[in-house]
Amino acid sequence: MAQVRSYVTLKGTKQGLQLLLDDESPFRTLLEQMEKQLNDQKGKLISAKDERLQVMVDAGRRYLNEHDRKELKELLETTFPLDVTEIRSDVVSRKEADALVRKKQMVRMARVIRSGQVLELEGDVILIGDINPGAVLKTTGSIYVLGSLKGVAHAGTDGDVRAVISASFMDPSQLRIAHVVRQPPENEEWRGMFECAYVNDEGSLELERAQKLGVLRPELAGEE
Image (cartoon, rainbow, N blue to C red; front, side, top):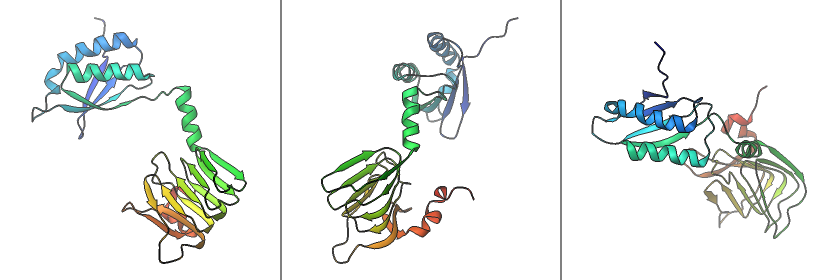
């Protein structure tokens, strides 16, 4: 007898269900067969409390565009008592891959960012120069200023709270990492040589000596 091909595999997890999809069949065929198989296994889709189950979909080496993802999500949530929490794929588009590379890149500049200038970048930034009062530097990664930081520095603009801001001379008008903002204190000077800013475990933006970055963010230390 010919072996029956399995288009979908169900696995139980602590969070709900994991749905493993066949990544070789045509997408339309996959949807049809997946619906049939899930109908045959409806007993596994009912929670003990008779609530909708959360499901993470793993598409393996299949590329799914936005339309495919929407169609897949609608089928699962409309036809079955499921709430899709994530659709994961090991394949990304060229555009998505280029965006990931830009976020991981290191941008090096030797210049002064002057008052009124707003510079928005992607990746980590090493600036050999100053950020003057009234100037703004924003980036998705961390900011390292080999000079004076007297303007505004915003690191982790995409929400990366692990980003840091470091400067040879720290006297900013505002520091921001992801959504966390810190203004200079009113009753004391906010100045220091070789300082860094980071978001602590409580979600507050703190200043520390730059020498402690390797302890605060071990991933920055690299390999010996």
